[in-house]
Length: 91
Length: 91
DNA sequence: TCCTTATATTCCAAAAGTGGAATATTATAT
DNA sequence: ATATAATATTCCACTTTTGGAATATAAGGA
Image (cartoon, rainbow over all chains, first blue to last red):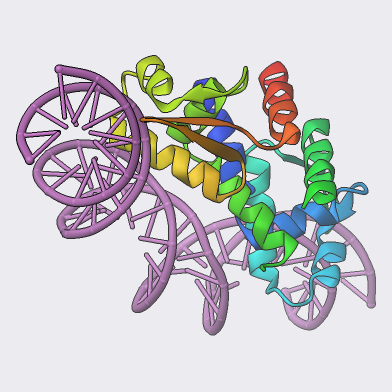
């Protein structure tokens, strides 16, 4: 297991891309199926959104759950939601 | 001025590097002079720390203040401190 | 003026990230 | 078995980041 600094750096790195941030913000109000996210963010390619979700999951920011053909993603840390909302108030 | 998503991505990008994170964490308990940070993080080169501070400042995460030969840096957003502390509790 | 201390900047090769296009996988229904 | 829908993966040229080494700048003191 990596040390804490590396783990945190990985979290921030996953959040450091505009597309991944938009994907994440889609999930601030709760779990969604990949297809819903694709539908909300039509401006991006399906593959791009899929890759974004996976990177966020690998960083520990999202968790997923499968049900038939669908995969549902949701936030795995309350911290993140609070921080994004705090930033949104201050920018 | 860029849009909010870009601004947030830039903040996360600035935080996405282990050295910059360590530098930032040095400042969680209050303003410090660059020389104090260099002294605390002896394992890194002076130039590396200087560049880290500047990148954090450019992202809007730190502010600085000059006094004679010294430059003092401090956090410019309460959000950040809360988030890092929340992460530290959860990792 | 010259020296010293504190901090910032430039240069650069290696490493990592980016996103589009095509393709693969997996699960379900017919 | 085959088709279809949902999601993931691979390939790849391009851009960006990284951090060390050397150098520059700015301020104060002798």
